Structure formats: structure tokens, C-alpha cells
Image 1 (tube, rainbow, N blue to C red):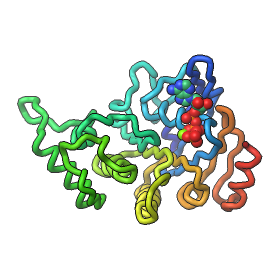
Image 2 (spheres, rainbow, N blue to C red; image 1 turned 180 degrees about the vertical axis):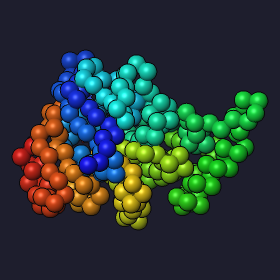
Image 3 (cartoon, rainbow, N blue to C red; image 1 turned 90 degrees about the vertical axis):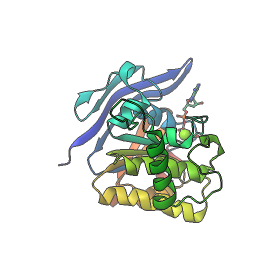
Image 4 (cartoon, helix red, strand yellow; image 1 turned 60 degrees about the horizontal axis):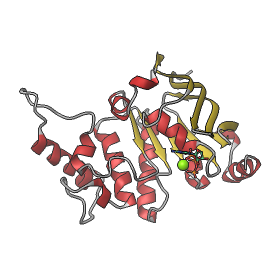
Length: 248
Ligand SMILES: Nc1ncnc2c1ncn2[C@@H]1O[C@H](COP(=O)(O)OP(=O)(O)OP(=O)(O)O)[C@@H](O)[C@H]1O
Ligand SMILES: [Mg+2]
């Protein structure tokens, strides 16, 4: 039996009068990829933001490797230091930050005097983005703000961070939306490779073929709750579509 990495029970989250999550229970096991499926507004991104440390949950319990996560002490930097890396759906996070700062955010490399090793970090960030991820765009330079990057390049930046820092859990919110075919293949390849490396992931997508391709287990969201669950052995893309229709 695999070890649980992340356990959520009874997680709720409201935005003013909008109740986005109404009690979510979810366990992510070691070396497991979960696919999150659901209509627009079902609460998938809200859950991802809670896991990533962007939003705080209102009630319920979250543990990572058996340790309770205190929402007030949990942030994107904390999550990253614990090995949870997120590829976000919306483009809002760290937009004005330079590419190299965003790459090392929360995990800067320091010299003996305690200063950030700026030149080294810039070089490392560019090495990963150009040599390993293969970004070729004109806007991709260490000092450029994240806002100049295209959708695919942003995904590449986040994936590069996950690779460089050897993330244990990678959370991807619609990583293939608005990507060219070649970039989609890269992202799906990255997700499959996580599995081979013994890592875990949560993969959110409206493209059920992409979710089917990479996930071991599928959770269907509806109105802020998980309504249905299927394991890969009991699913086909057609079954995923039919189940989604029932949860819409
Ligand atoms: N910051 C916010 N303020 C107010 N309401 C919000 C906020 N963020 C999300 N919501 C609402 O919470 C609900 C869940 O939104 P969420 O983004 O989690 O859905 P989703 O499942 O990711 O949808 P999609 O598939 O369209 O990305 C929606 O009704 C949304 O309008
Ligand atoms: Mg979303």
C-alpha cells in the first residue's frame, strides 16, 4: 500500500457569499497521479490554490506527510520548500517578477555572507529554461518580467522549477490549455515522467484525453464537492466523458 502524501478532509472555502468548496476529502498517495475533472466553476482551481499555498481554507484538515498544515503558516514559498510545486491556470502569480527571481522564489541560493547569488541564479535559470526545457522565445531572458512570457513558456518555467528543485508533488492546473501540439506533448511527457520517477501529481484539465493519458485515478468535481471517482482500470475516455456529463 502506498504512503499518503497529502490528505484533505472536510476542506471548505468561501469567497464572500460564494461557497467554492463545500467539504472536500482527498488523499494523494506516493507515486500517484490524480486527474481532477469538472465543469467551469466546480472548484478545481480553488482546491489547487489551497494546496499551493495561494489561498487559505476556512475549515477542514490538510496534512502533508502526516503533518498538519496550519493555513496561516502556509504559503507558496512554504509549499515549494516542502516539495509541492504548482503550475497555475491563471496568469496572475508573480507577473511583475523577473524570470530568474520567479524561478528561485522561496529558495534563493546564498553565498557565505548571506547575499543572494544573483549571477549564478540567472545563469542556472536560463540553463534550465533554454537547455533542458528548450524555450527559444525572444522574450526568454533572465531579467525579463514573467508577464512577457507566452502561456506555453509560463508552463515551461513552472515545469523547469519542478525539475530543478526535484519536487515531490507537482500540481498542474490546465497545463495544456492554449498550447501548441508540440508543447502539449512536452507537458504530457513531463507528467508521465513524474510517474516513472516515483513522484506524485494532480492534473486538472478539461481535455479528458489528456487527463486519461496521465492519471491513475479520476475525481469528478461538482459544485464544490467530489461527486464521483474512477480508477484507470475502470475508465476509458468515453467513460470519463459520460461520468462528467452526469456531474454537470
Ligand atoms: N477570488 C474569487 N472571488 C470570488 N469568487 C471566486 C473567486 N475565485 C473563485 N471564485 C468562484 O468560486 C467558484 C469555483 O471557482 P474555481 O476557479 O475553483 O472553478 P474551476 O473548477 O477551476 O473552474 P474552471 O474549470 O472554469 O477553471 C466559482 O463559482 C468562482 O466564480
Ligand atoms: Mg480552474
